[in-house]
Length: 400
Image 1 (spheres, rainbow, N blue to C red):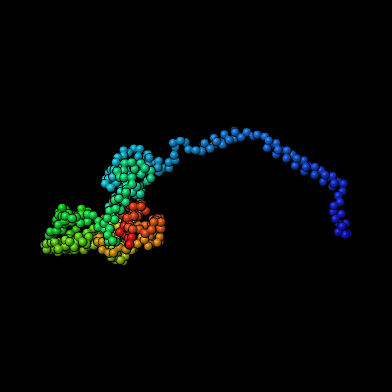
Image 2 (cartoon, helix red, strand yellow; image 1 turned 90 degrees about the horizontal axis):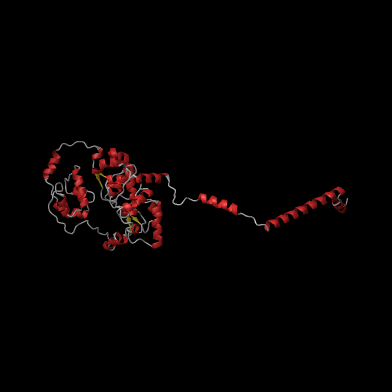
């Protein structure tokens, strides 16, 4: 069969097939007509959606918080209920007693944190500094804020910052007011028995005098002039000024030598926390045995100790155990390792135990935008660091 004949046979339909095709075509035409008519009618008919829209508006209104209502989480609710039963009063967080803190609704743990901060030389300059204290809840701060007897914000540019610039001279370390009074005088003295007023006449500050008095009251004793230099906070210039006037009677030494010696417990030995290795700490036993490795590592990470109270920053060192050995701790003089904030990268900054990664990023960002730091006080003036962090970190920073 030829191709032409095959095509003719393919397109040839029987009578029944022809009828079926005609019926199918009629159905298709009818469907198209009905569809077009329905669409035309829908376009020309106004449908009332008002009822449906009202239902939508009613549903959306039910989702909105009622006027005057705010979400209060469980902790904030507890704080609000707690303070509803308290009578608040004006207070300065730098001088508030433990009893008054309790009246103000603070917990024992919060009070301990604040006391620890103040003991290390920290200070609250404005209300925002109190807000940043670890453990103070946002809702708790909002309630106490009107009663805090401090300014909302401190103008550091006209106080600390300006004072720093006045005393800063060509890269030399600025002189701190109050270190050596202008009206001091020197005279022969025995450091074991002179009065507080005599210490002040010799040019020592009230804080230094208090440290000396605390040392003597706890059984400490000056056996030779050099012992005065070991007292925390006594500057080398102060010691050099008075060392030739120190007179310790020989009888004191004889009495001391005549006392039968007893074997000291490991925790009663004088310990220089700036020079001992981890192994030497552990060999002392007691408190040092369990904390020596951590202390040595922390010392190396921060760049040396400048205060024995820094031991409380070492993870795991408890206050009660620290107090047992504090009188026997010596902070040997070392050159603290300082970070050059104008050259340090983010990794070096964040590696310091007193800095978090976000602190490092903030320092780098400010330096990139505004150029090099002229002095480290700008970190606090511009609120780059909190007062707590800045006070801890200050001895380890330099803008040189």
